Length: 268
Image 1 (cartoon, rainbow, N blue to C red):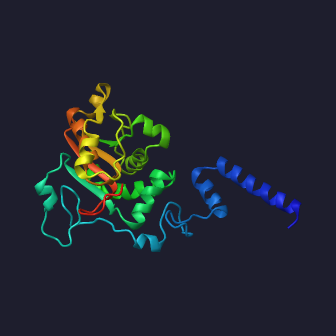
Image 2 (tube, rainbow, N blue to C red):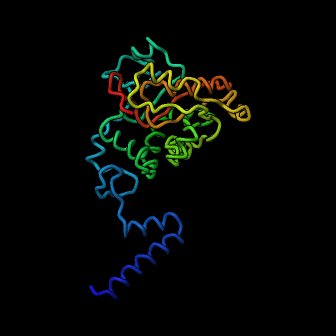
Image 3 (cartoon, helix red, strand yellow):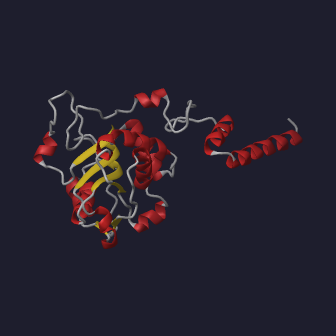
C-alpha cells in the first residue's frame, strides 16, 4: 500500500468515526463495531456483543444464588430451609437489613473490580451494573431510592470518578428506582481499607458518613438500597447505614457486585 493509500485509508476511518458520532446510539454502535469489534471485558477476546464476557471468563465467575443467608447473602453449600441465617448473621447481626451481591470476589471478579476501580476502565461499569442489578432485584423491587457509597472529595479528585456511583446509575436504569447521588456524603477522609483487619476497618470509617440536613427529606421514611462495588467485612456499609438511619431511613439494604467469602482474604 502506498502513502496515498494509507492516507486514504486513515481518512476513511476518520470519516467513519465522525459519521458514527452523528448517528443514533444504536446505529452508531453497530457501525463502530465494524471497525472495533467488541471484546471480552476481562481478557479482551473477541465476543459477539459489547460489555460482556467470553465463555472462558464467564465460567470462572462464581455467581451467588440461592440458597444463601437471608441477611448477609452468604451462599450455603446446601439448602437448609427458607429464611435460614448464617452463623455470621446470628453471631453479629448487621446494622443494615439485607446484603446481596452478584458474585464472589475472586479470580475474574477481582480483575474486573480492580480494572474499574484502579485502572480507569469505566466501561466496565456497564457489565458490573447489569449483573449487580440482576442480583438485587429482590431489594430494588421494595426500594424507594438508590444511594451510592460516596468517596471523600479528595479521593474523588484524584480518581476522577466514583465507581459506586457508576454502578448505582446502571442499577437505577435497570430497576427504574430513583437515584440520589448526593444524599450521603463522606465527611472525613479515611485510610484505604486495604490491609486493615476487621476492627481496624470499623475504627477507620467510624463517623465518616453523613446525610446533609438539606437531603434528609429525600431519605426520611424511605427504603434505601446502598450500592458499592465490593462487600468485605461490612464495616464501611455499616458506617454508611448508621448515617442513613440517623437521617430517618426505614430500611437500608446493601447491594454490591461482589462479596468476599467468609474467612476469605481481605485484599480490597
